[in-house]
Length: 249
Image (cartoon, one colour):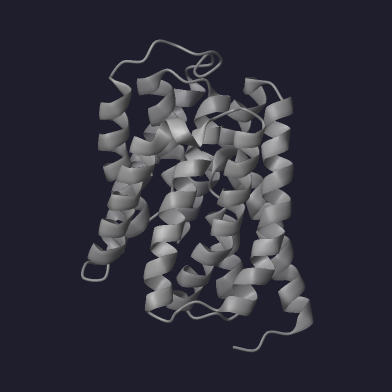
């Protein structure tokens, strides 16, 4: 597919903005997927190319969070393994089932997250004791959320962040950092399925991916410097925007 330089520049900018937003609170897809569709990319290729460019951003954010000491990938092996298995399963199953039937349920779940976070001002401000064993959490939620991301996707970052805060007692900084690592795993698995199907538009995906790298590095560095309250406000904005996007799509 041929794209002119102006359109390519706009897609690069969309990638950068999405990388910034996604590295802080997730939801970058509400920027990039509409941008790809507006550029005339067919829906199935837009979904595939979106996974390519978002993989750049999630890898950059996860790497930067690890470098800044906000999470340690080696300690999260169980979560990585079961997220991989869950995402692979979801990406395979979605080829036989219509994913759009999930939208109404996902909107309800995101509304619950939004309301609960808005009405709990101290949520995630500081670490709390975990409510279930770490191994059990990463096994169950790696499978569930990984499967969901491979199968459908919108709101994945929000579900990871809230689960980590509520059940493992992480503060929002640590939860955001871990979320990006698990996002990267499920992105890469889904991307592998799309590459096998021959649906990825490489030139567009790489250009947007470069934008993702810049935006994700900026956003993840900002999280390290800012107070948790900033992340909470940003999280609410992104979850609210995701809800609106799903309702009007």
